[in-house]
Length: 56
Image (cartoon, rainbow, N blue to C red; front, side, top):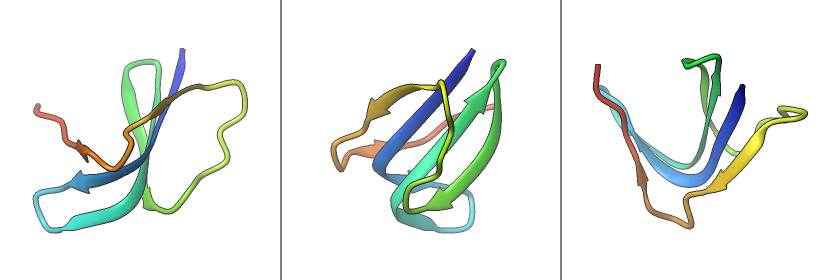
């Protein structure tokens, strides 16, 4: 399964990434980047400017 979470502020241990995108494939984060990332056939979640974070 491929998931793309876009249009949010990503909280990392080191900084905030505004207007960021997180890509997840088979339950693992594969990319974190500012701006949009092309990820064909992914389910897309628009964070609508909200925060994106994860815990491990």
